[in-house]
Length: 198
Image (cartoon, rainbow, N blue to C red; front, side, top):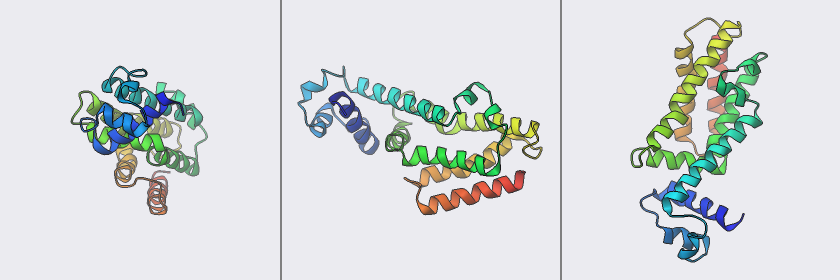
């Protein structure tokens, strides 16, 4: 990790634990082990560091979607789910949950957004889009596709999306890692959901 990357990493930790306003450039420099003035060789100011963290995390999310071959679903192509099974649906959900609570960067990013959603202009919208609106919209389309293709029982796709996602969202708020308890609870929820709807 070079100095520029280390600054982002340390700043993400500080912002996600103390809050953006409570952290100074001096605090970041001290933790990185460089002079305060050296920060400005890499970033214009604290806002530039914050903005760079947001871009870094957005890029990490896209890499995750690509690694699961799900990037095309963002544009509405759900054919990747043509051969979905209850186990595959469970594995997808577990992988996403693990990514947001166990991935070191994404876990801190989630905490940062949670802390700052009411403090920094625009962050509340990012938080709601990422953890509420986009998942519900995506899952509504997914379940509509699966219902149309007879993989799930006929139902209201949006209501099904809320039923599917609400416990996952709650568990993301409760657990900082995919602990054995979290995995057990999440797996049981997914099993129950699949049994009810297939």
